[in-house]
Image (cartoon, rainbow, N blue to C red):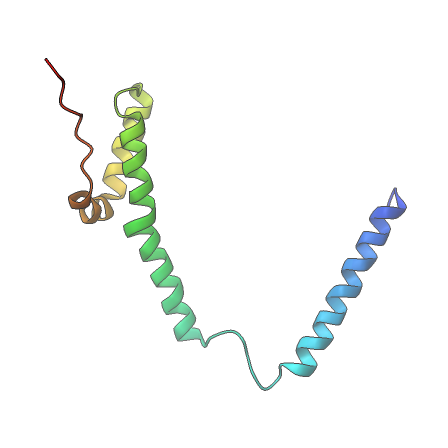
Length: 107
């Protein structure tokens, strides 16, 4: 089935490790589950999605705006407008804390 003996050995090693892990988890962890209950897991997933939508992606979008605003072409400008529209709530939350205005020119 395998063309080289090293791949066969690797596959066999993975199978043995997985079987031993399965035996360990079924024997030693029956009374205590490491996974949280379903409502808590759902709350964690919702918090992660909300944090990504309201903080992480808009922050990356703001810095992308700063880096590319004066160098974009027409298609990239449409993409930037889409990002501003899609992540508007997060941009609205973060925008009071950032000042990306151009520096004053000396005359």
